[in-house]
Image (cartoon, rainbow, N blue to C red):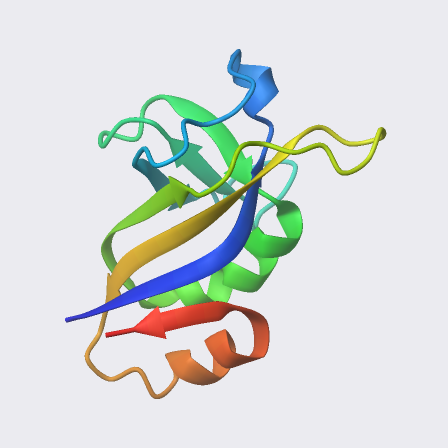
Length: 124
């Protein structure tokens, strides 16, 4: 197995769950929600390994781009906030910069072109 890390993805909607932002440096968990009625590409973020306490979502643009990438995921997908939440527009809620990590198959020949076209990443 190889490890993949993707940087500069954003989470949104933290304020709907009561928190203003995720704790910087803490470990969170991600899971695709293909049956989400508002967005079939949605990726939810949870604060527990059992994936029962949803705290926010990946930003829609990031979730759409990462949909294909997360198909290579083997096991748990982790998320770690890197900075405090920021508000970029008065029309949208706060967003928080994060990194995502997951284990993937040894053969990454199909994964690399997808990552190269969209994100700063590292596979080792």
